[in-house]
Image (cartoon, helix red, strand yellow):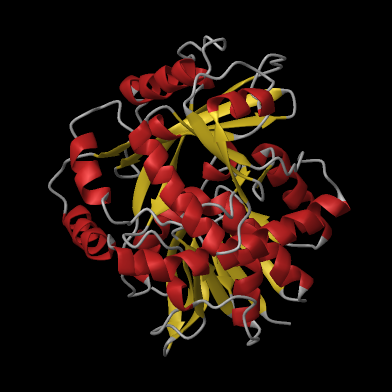
Length: 411
């Protein structure tokens, strides 16, 4: 039986372990953290086939330049003299055009729809993680943003996604959980959501049942090679033999790839979220507050708010109150009855989303190292794309035809 080692115990690593174990592989996961609080736990829990436009898109450079000087803006690049940031920025610039977006859209749609199908399978088995299909509302307050949202929605319709264009009055009728102050919105009817912590609990239980070995609090320090093949993984808790390696370490992937002689351009996009518990009065449908790029997700009796994308480095562990204030201002402008206040530091979550300069995830075999496969760089779409990524990685390692075309997900 082939032994597969997965480096990274976030949702991508866990879903990959699930499908590999189902296929009969002997699977071991290594993660440096206690595996109870990464991006996979604090995210907005959205499964979004509607998100077909990558971060690298036309107009993003000009918009990003404006936002860079506003510490409360949705997208912010922390200015610093850093070779990785410069290299990433140049690549981002190269990808931020219509041609790239046109190629990226169908690839992201196919990956997303496969993921949603796999989530439906999980939920049929045991919906302990509150999977629901209520769609997603893209809410806006200004004509300018309405125009942008209409353009995106028409592209989504061309790709076969179901879309409703709603006035402010129609939104008020549909969203009966709380009052909305909006010009209008787009309802992507095929989107879904779940409670991330509960899903992580569920998938860990499944892995236990499938006899997957999990080494949390274990740092991978190095690799032993034989020709172009990894034979052993060196950790601070011992050395482990392996036949295959999957690198699914999110924002920490570049430093590990470097030890393998492979260059991976990923920068962490720091995001924040906080959850209000047992709220009777709350929005009932997941939404994105477009002007502030804030995600709002009802999760059973709770509600979670998340947002901002700050391109930074993994050592940046301070909570930036200005970024948080930007999220709170948006919530109170869109939902005037919510009256949300600044959460305590202990109730504020932040995480590093792994952002590639193309805005596309990396799901591919390495070229130089014969038994290495990448499953990283999913940015804000980690939860949304995790089951599909896990299934595809399993197909790649098993030498099968992949369920969706992966040429847009190369390194």
